[in-house]
Length: 295
Image (cartoon, rainbow, N blue to C red; front, side):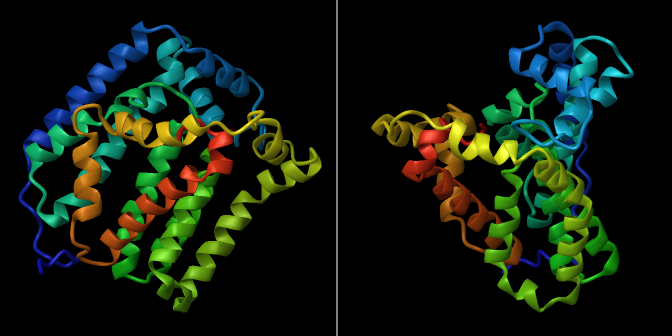
C-alpha cells in the first residue's frame, strides 16, 4: 500500500495546476460579468439586502457571499465574485488532498474540467456555491484531523461545520456520514469540542427558527412536497446524477469511485459519503420533494 499519510514525502510541485486554476478563474469571471443574473440569483440577492440569521427556505450564507461581493462591485460580477473565488479555491484544495495519493496533475485537470456541476457553480451564486466550498474545506481539514488530534484542527473544524450548515441544510449529511465512516471519532475528546463549538456558532440560526415558528422546517418537510409520487422521480434520478457529474465522464467517475480500493480512513469517508448521500436522496419519499440532489 502506498504511504498516503501527512508525513509522506511531498509530491513534486506541478505548475499546470496553477495555470489551470488561473484560466478557470478567468473564464468564470468573464461569464460572471457578461451573463445576466438568473432568477434564483436575483432571489438570493434580495436576501443580501436584508441580512438576517435565517430565511424562509435557506440559511444565510448565500446572502453573505452576495453581500460581500456586491458591496465591492455593484453589478452582476459583484453578485458572483465570491462564488468565482471560492470555487477556484475549492479546486485547489481538492488538488492538495488528492496529490497525496500521487494523482497526476494532467489527469486531475481533465477530470475536473469534465465535471458539469463544477461549471454551473463556477460562477452561479446559489446556496450550493458556499455549500461546495465549505464541503471541500471540511474534507481538507478533516483529512489532517484523522492524522493529528489537535486543538487547532478541532477549532477549525467546528467553525467550518457551522459555516457548512449556514450554507445549506444538506451539510448535516456530510457530517453524519463522516461519523458513520469513522465511528472511532467518538473516542476523541476533541470530537465533542468540535460538536459543541459548531452548535454554539449555529445557535443564532436555531434561535431564529424558534422565534419564527420553524419556517424552513415546515417548507422543506411539507410545503415543498409534490402532490403525488411519480415513478419517473426515481428512475430519472440516477440519470440526473450522471449528467451532473458530466455527460462524458459521469459514468467513469461513478465506476472508479465505487470500485477503487479503500486505502485509508479518508478514502473510506469519501466512499461512505458518496454512497450514503446518493442513497438518501434516492428514497421515494424524498424524490417527491427533490427532483435532484442540488435542490
